[in-house]
Image 1 (cartoon, rainbow, N blue to C red):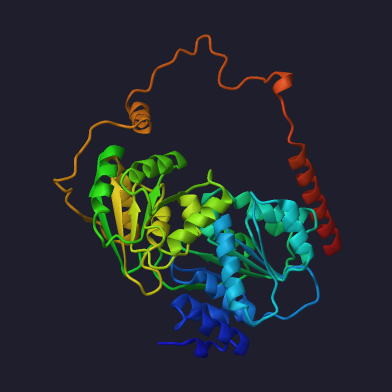
Image 2 (image 1 turned 90 degrees about the vertical axis):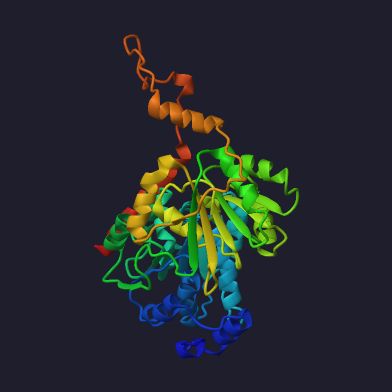
Length: 440
């Protein structure tokens, strides 16, 4: 088994790795280190929990050269603010004995405060695409100074609709730069990004695309509706083995509803995070869950994407994920590194199509567990389930005879112009024109 001594980390970086308690590099870390240091574009495909963040941070920090310039030379793009915080923390941990200034920027925080922090000096900037673009357009981030671009969790960024933002942002960067892309899944959209922006990239794929981590045991129950799911979850939580449980739900409303239901039994030791919760509240919930002050954390997909919490014993998919990619990311929250984990999914009979797609992706079926006789099955549906049922089976036939249609001219008083967006686009076009002139 390889050790970090085999990677030629240098004394400062090696000491930081030792103090962080890392014993052996993961396969993606071993394979990526020399390839990234070669200066070539690199694409890394590895599942969640395999150490992708450290895989690109180690070689970037190993080759970091101190500069008196106040502008960032390395840009790391991630999909969520939670992941920004995580990457910044890991970068600071590894650069403990290096003179490296790492700053994180994301939406939802005071942009003027972030501008001030950047003006103090930064070597590595980590951020979400929208906020990076805003800070780049006003000069707080000097785009033409970027030498290395990292796009992390690119599949999730594309799922969240960031493709246009990514394209516009990359257009502002220097042509001569190193591109690094890391993803848990390899989709057609990810392939498109590689084709459009990378130059003869070195591809590292440490596991077959879509193959779940071998140390995660995957099970499923057939459960018809919300109330029955809630009863089953309460039944499962009686087991002491479920000591650190991450529960995924489909929406913010569902997260709050389930939290209220579980809180009737577990008044303490339970938390919930979603985008309607304040930033400080979410960070507090995540920290308390990581420190084992909470036993149960309920989360939506977008918020939980950047979570990197050790020793999660169980992931429970209370609701079916929207895509098989989301499923892979969810279960990857347990069984991290060399630990074993368990995922349990509640599927309704109507979600058989998703199971077939998952079987095709992973080449295996989820083990079906017989529904416990002692758990009550309730026929009543919540409003969302009723609406879905109506939409599928009872679509009303409206008369269009006197209809004005769904689209009509707004009254003048209701027409708004997004002037800030127009100005931003104009600045972007000016920068593009300036770059074209320089090339000529």
